[in-house]
Image (cartoon, rainbow, N blue to C red; front, side, top):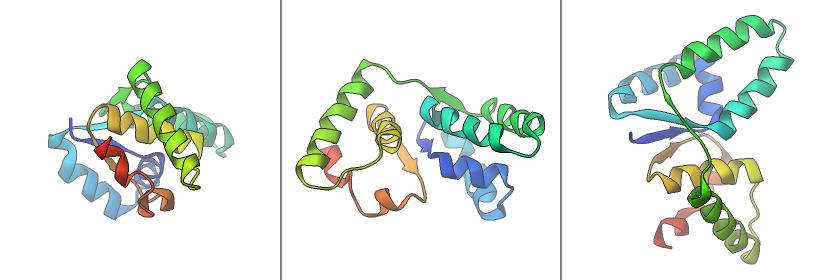
Length: 129
């Protein structure tokens, strides 16, 4: 497994955004995963959808093709360490985004995202810890 998909990547995939579908299809052989935190965020979208049953079927189809990673004690430790570090340097990040990032760090995966917090390099130093 090489890649962890951020929630936004799954949303774009489910919305059938061609660029994301093509990108993920090209990476599928290297291994794709999502955090259980992303699954929770995706369920929020399902219950807000105009057709929740159809949205849930699409999500379940997608999830059957990737690995879902849970939060374990090591990921929790990484979360706490990184949250403390980011608060100390005045760059807080949402807890859910940081839990997803901690999952990527825990499993040494590359996080695929379009989230601006990650573009700002908030966790660039994390791999040096």
